Image (cartoon, rainbow, N blue to C red; front, side, top):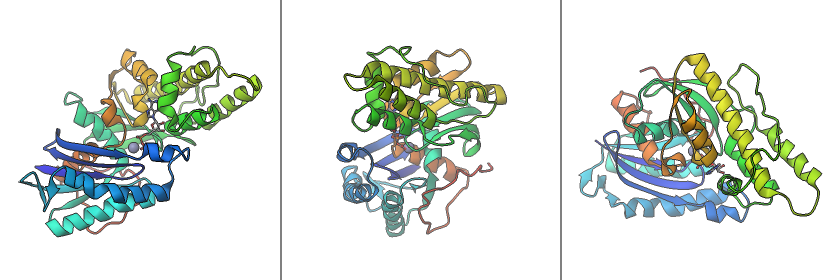
Length: 334
Ligand code: KG4
Ligand code: ZN
């Protein structure tokens, strides 16, 4: 069973070919990050145009043509249907429709969040279900209970900014380049994480919910207070990062207490963060799973894996389908 995965929901164009559940045969990503950096963030219209330039060359580079991958017939095409940026999603979804029709290969639409869950299933054959999935990216901060493949319960999410967005905004106000997460991660290594105390939002509430906008404002005030001159950027980065990680770990601990599930898997761009990975992997409250950095950020192998799992369980998406920028993760029955 060969699945072609296509991902274009934000600013990475990605194409992958997967055999069965886990064998990644081809996996290529065309990143637009450097092109958006000069604007300090993703410019949606620009992103859509760059997806359009990248997508056919990515397929060609993999030797994917006429419904075949290097001489072997493709059995399924899986494409990210949402959530994401409308213009970006359109490129992937329309390309996938055209290929599906022209090659007579079935097409399935995948929720991007479900894709991030599958990044862990793909990377860890030993990961048993049920497990808790922490999705932390530029657009999402959610904890899901994964009861079985394709069967999820949303335990909670963010009230305002996503964790990655908080990193990016914090970096911006410290004068650091976009994307801010990796930059804060890097500078925090040379800083004192206890130099500044920022409030840990929703710390003592009994709900699995996050809020990061207050933390960002606290950082802003602290920067103003410190006045002009040279800012202790490394200490500010380390302290801010410690607080974001504490928020995430606190709520994971609550989710473990509420569900009794002691396996935790993290994915999404922020799961590449060194301090978060250390905190997850060193906790004695759970066994932690984090995919390699390549599968934390957006990629098409995870979309192909989710597609193959859905297809194997008899799910399909009525053809044709439109992109849905605010697609909800349905709690599918198995
Ligand atoms: O999953 P992703 O590649 O794209 C989305 O679906 O959003 O996540 C990108 C986000 C950005 O906000 C970026 O700053 C953050 O992930 N990120 C990090 C790190 N690497 C990427 N945040 C903290 N530490 C990192 N090492
Ligand atoms: Zn993502």
